[in-house]
Image 1 (cartoon, each protein chain N blue to C red):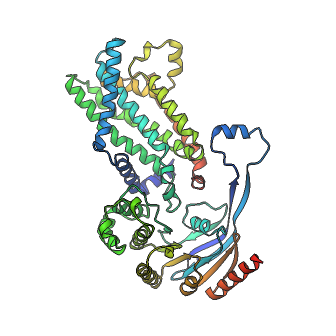
Image 2: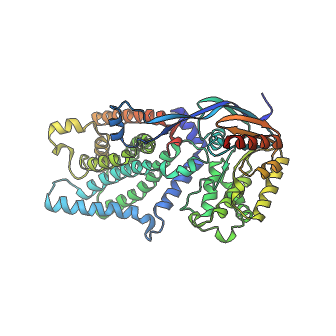
Length: 258
Length: 249
């Protein structure tokens, strides 16, 4: 990993430049611009809140905050990985004319998503005030959870960026994974509402553990169980290691495929 | 250690030439059961070696598909060679073709920043020079225009101005004079001569034989990925033209 880190440091200017220009291009010709990154989670929250608090009547305390924590985490995951998908293909012209490390676009996709995450956390803070929810002191641990999530995002972003150049199917497969993942992650329900067999399988999903940890520190004021922490760190390290190996296998020749 | 600005030793590069490119996993899976090979190996560069001195303009000529662009991309680290080595003294080596990989949705100014940062230039320095770049490219009116609305000549001017003011040690020019009007060509020519005087190495690729003879100190003729000849401009151009004439018959 040291080589990637060294390259990151040397090219940190372009890392942020890519992230900012991505945001600019994303919101070009749109009147509301970057406000869209606030509106999207708010709309999601509204829909899910109406459906699950009036129709299905889930008995989850502080349901709006519970929902929003899950949505914010999942959106970060979705944004980071899906921006990375096309980060190399969008820069095919640039790649064939100036050399830059192939890891930069995927990494800067992570930064773009982090910038949008900050906006969404502001929304979360506003909702905490509106619902007069007194957050426990453990909320200070949320950045640690999100940091771990960032590692996961980058670990998936790197291989996705090269795989999508090589096989166009990657994009379609990943979109399915993302929509399935939204329902298989305890965002609008609690994990223990699931049958035990399903829980046994889903506990290996890093997003399940991340969202559970976020709920713990933001809502319950308790530390996540040691099991949750170990599962999260274990699955994220495994995914990131495999992702890095895939990336390393394809990165040198990927420019010949664009 | 040599005194050369660019030293290319025994570079070879093969490409897989797909006849039906397999882009989807389904196709990969099905072709696994078929014995038929979907690609042939194309030897684009075969044992190419040459050196470029400081202050030298080194021309590369050859017909389309002779491996010129691949060679330039290997020198600028975009492609990795299959074998051989490239030793380059200097940090910055843009390939200057049409544009510098400009993003069509970004304005001229934003693209200047993006390209210069990629070429290893600190942001504060770019801010100081961005006006000069725009002025040199004669694009004062279009600084805030998106590059997608630029003509080919305008993109070329912007690319040339950006890479020149970033002050690279080595300049790689791929058909730069194909677009651009007489005035700007003159300006480019003067700038390149100034670069030469300051001891920078320049690689110049062109199909314009007159320009190559007028311009270059040494010329290499690439023939189907091999070095056909390296020598003085007149001799090499003549050898190239004679060889192509023979091919036709």
